[in-house]
Length: 250
Ligand code: MG
Ligand code: MG
Image (cartoon, rainbow, N blue to C red; front, top):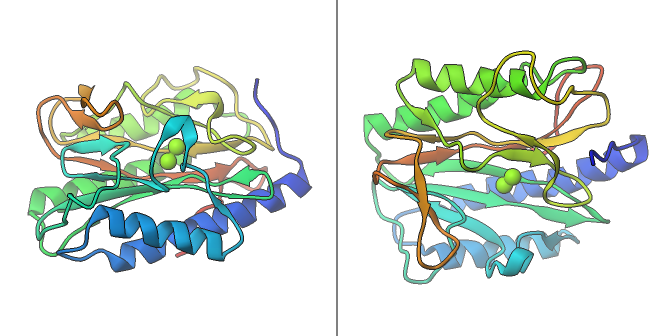
């Protein structure tokens, strides 16, 4: 069931989104060679709590961290660890949510560590741009398939592939609500978008094939062929004035 948000609920979503966006930005500023993903996770938890919110991911389905932090061929759901030390040339994805007064944001970004390869840079840029190609269609009257097609066609034009096994989703009261928002689709197909919907649009893009697998830790999703992967996500409100990015702070 799709839970539409009224004006008052949207205001709370904006607050939750702002905290989510701010913590993601602040965590990105701390990324450097030598820091562990556990240290980043602790920073994220403290930051969210200091802002009167709760890390949505902590304990969600039993997840042990406050953020998912995934490095290089890891696509999503990486578990923060003091054994994972970032090094020059890595790309690191942070995916995070802050819950505030019963509503949550959900946002992710891929950050380069030091000097990364030209191909890694292109992957990060194409993934980010594909998000904007997708949400250009996030307006009342369009359909979920229009968003997915916008993402998929841009990614494939650039020679990369879109992960199909994991998708975007409604967001708000819960981290994952209806409807699903695939990063692929057919124009004019799928659920019709309308004012009051809040969705997390989150392209996951691989340099190689789209196939992924889950590691023995039961969380970490990696590319099946070991190629690099990038992720970019914002929580977006569908409004009559166009898409409103709830988690974008800069
Ligand atoms: Mg997320
Ligand atoms: Mg999400």
